[in-house]
Structure formats: C-alpha cells, structure tokens
Image 1 (cartoon, rainbow, N blue to C red):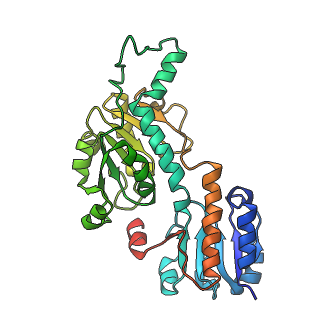
Image 2 (image 1 turned 30 degrees about the horizontal axis):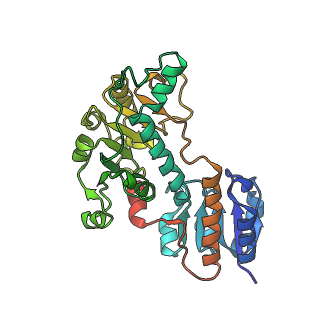
Image 3 (image 1 turned 90 degrees about the vertical axis):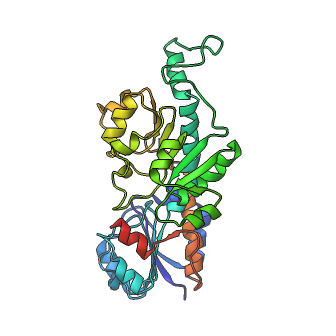
Length: 338
C-alpha cells in the first residue's frame, strides 16, 4: 500500500506549480489526497489525518502537528518556511519531521532578474528608455554622462553580496563571467566556508563602502530587520548601484527612498515594505531607481520548478530516503528568525 500524502497547495494553484509529468510522479509515489485548488476543509482533514505521512501546503493551517501521528514531512510551496507562530517547530524537530521550503525553486529566476536590474542601473537602460520616449535621447555621439552620472559596465567591478544563501549561490555564476571579485557579508557563515566558495568574507561596513554593485540577498530574521538604516546606507559610494532582491525587511525603506531621491546612488528594487506599493509613494519619482513589482520569481518556469522539487522529495520520502531538493529548516535558523 502506498503512503498517503495531502496535496493542499492553496494559495498556489495546482496547474501553476505541477506539470502533468510531476503530478504523475506524485501519484506514482503516493496515494495523493485532495489535490484541489481550494483549501481542504477541516472536516475532510479530520477523516484522514491519522494516515498522512506528508503534507504539501501553501502555508501551515492545520494546528498541532501531533494531530498527524504518522507525519514525517511538511513541504511548503508558498516560498518560505511556515512562521513559528503557526507551526510548532520544536515538535517537528523532536519527531524528526522534515520541514521543507520550496525557496530554492525561485533562486535561478530571481538571480537572473537581479543581473538584469544591475545592468539596467549601471548602463542606465531604463533612464535612457524614458528619455528617448520624451524626445531627449542623448545620443552617444553627443554625450556620455547623464543626470545619473556616467554609465559603466559590470566588467571587473567589485561586487558585494549581503547574504550567501540560495539566491546568492544562484547569482554568483551569472556574475563571474564579468570578471568581478565578490565579497560577502553573512554572519551565519564562517569565513573559511565563504573562502571555500571563492568569495571574500568582509564586515558589512567594508562591503557597503567599497563595493561598486551591492546585492541584498539575505533572508529575513529577527537580527537583520532594518539592518540597512540611514547610517549604513550612507556608507554606499556615490557611484555605486544598490540592488534590493530578497526582502524589504532588511532595509529602512524611508531612508533608502530619501537617499535615492537625493541622487546618492543608483538602485534597483524588486521588493517593497507594503505591496502593492502606494500610488503616491515618493520612490516612484526617483530617476535614480529602476523599479520592479516583485516580479523576480514570478514566472512560469520558476513556479513549475516548485512542482519538480516537490515531486523529487516526495519520491525520496515515500521510499524511505532523505529529501534533497527542497530547503530543510534548521533549528538555528528558526530560532534566529523568531
């Protein structure tokens, strides 16, 4: 008899994350229960909870994990780990329940857009497009500089990564062909590990003050909320580009807005403290910023990657092997995240 798994991905839609092939893989590995876009009703969950070995969900909404005596894995398809307020992580860890996030599915797409935002900033692509449409094309045979300063290439520049997780590891090989040296601030990782990844560990002040292109890639935690405040952001050199890709949680967004409006440095921003962003937010008027409406991971291929890695790990779990494709929650991270 095949193990029973609960497929309850809401708010995600089945057809967006699961190809026919990956859905067939799930059905081959397990007895798949529910499998609909609507959340599974509590009454239906109650009927099967004692037999479920894995739950694939958009968020944890099922109460105490001890309701599920055979549960050995929670596979989250929303994009981050369930909050500690909703899921009892100590109970999961004590029972060796794998808590898995689909975050790695988004890393290649987010990294690619990060590179695009960087190029749009340093080559002034968005600004040039706006100027051209307003009949102010600034042809290259007449001028090289603009109100944003002088455009520059990525080649050979000092790059800084704030955070070196899934996203940074996906971005690194995209940056390397430009011959950039990469320095990293990540207090969760040892210097020896970072050097082994062919990057240079530095403190945050050094990274901000010496990098020509800065990527914010760190996952949010208690310790890094608002870490990049006005004082830290003021360390950024005036000819630099600042790319905000992971979460606005890390940045004092009012300070960032003020500095970008003042023309202190260039910025590419994909995430905001409130989404959708207010129509009258002043960052919308910043010529020194290239703005993206949280689109970095929002594409069909990235969403289909979720289904692929979920199917990979369900195949492993249902055959008594270790899941390898999704990101595993670690006690240290959960304590720090809070």
